[in-house]
Image 1 (cartoon, one colour):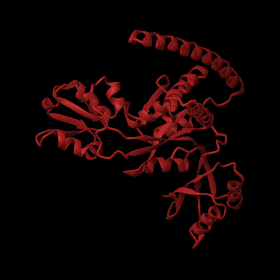
Image 2 (spheres, helix red, strand yellow):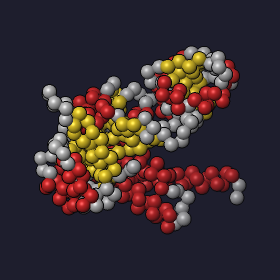
Image 3 (tube, rainbow, N blue to C red):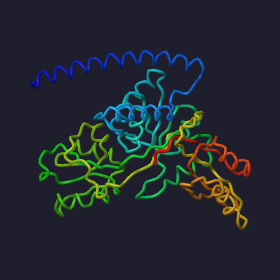
Image 4 (tube, one colour):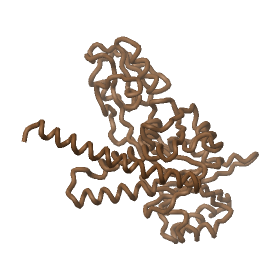
Length: 357
């Protein structure tokens, strides 16, 4: 069979896929009308996970080429388009445009959503809490640099819930208008990017290369686009945003650099998926044994704690600490509710969501 015949087959399959997608979206419109009438939530992470798991199982049973990652990548974009057809919703994120938080938001909500970049994490919480946007995306921790204190502090005081977590590998690209790297005389980026890409810089450039620190990798891409002989170490989405050609991908020293992001909403409560994580705020006393007794309740019920982070309670004229606690399981599970009944005035629910990390 020749190449033209194979391409004709692909075109015919693409036509079928498009017809089926249009058929799916017509049903999505009807679902959107029902949800709008019932004031239901459009974004259901546990439902999306169940669909992806089911389709991955079908692909495996059929010995298909598409593995779980491929199925997830395709259908997350389909879900994002579907949500915008059901009910277009605004998504705020810690800016600027082209940041890794922007990339995380677009990975979850797709290219069609309306995105609002904000200058601070507090502003993202403000916009979600006041209803100016339906969802917010903020970083919570990086496995190389540690936790983001501002996000944890805002969770302690705001009427906002966690509806999903999203781990994102932090991959840096090297982008420039210069086709020949030897003609590059300066590189723009953030200080952290320079640190994490030190080996690449040493391997490809001499001591005379100028490393210029800027506020964001998005700013770096913009400057590299405008200046002759300049390049940027930036995110893939920043290079895409400014249409700056990428010369090299994945230039970071460590391939294990991952940031965990949270998706926030004011009025979304997820149903159980069977593989959930829950976050709570624990306002524990400061008497001897108080923290140990609290943690013992989880051990007795075989509830696995995945994170515990102390933060100042910010009580006037006193030094007290509250604790952000993550554990496996859904808030509505019976053994979790048993702990809640022991500490009814101590625990504040922050969200149950599909476990991704």
